[in-house]
Length: 197
Image (cartoon, rainbow, N blue to C red; front, side, top):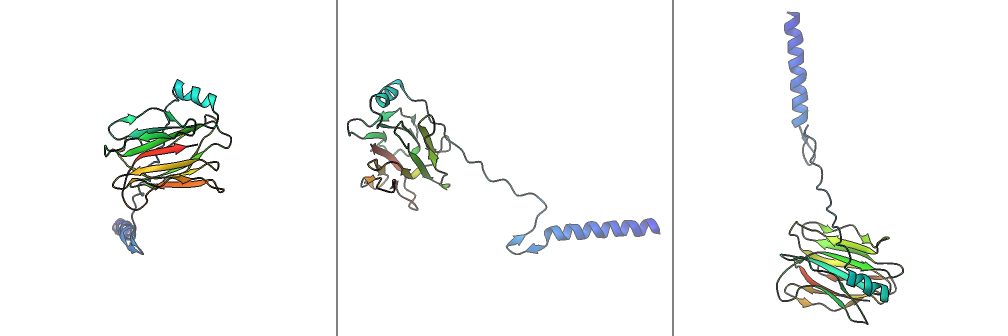
């Protein structure tokens, strides 16, 4: 009888424990299973600077170079602004989305950039470090880059070519050093970017 009583108590405790696990709580039901961890933030590694880009940056320390990772193409190669001529990365007229953008500069103060990416939203800002190079967006996930924020010295300008819109008005970093190109909340991909230093 004592064994039966102990078995009954153990079964009752197990039943209470199981019912507590599945009792409704505010906003849903409790669960004994741990919540799945959030997806890791994928960081994009900028490609190495080409010899031509290094040479351009050595000749003019104010130069900004860009390299775009484009749908079906991959990394295009470094393009640098020179003699007040903009560096253009991406494609126009091919309906190919920009997925990531790398920026490199040796200018004092550097550059910071932040990308708004499809299904992710605004990513954490990246700044040019000791290497003078940063990369934003994603690679290998087929997600469109929708907008780009940059912080740079006054006079740095950027312009985006957006799907179904075309070239937007050029935006320049003012006294606060901030500029933003592209669109947010419209599900439109940036297809190309012009950067002028």
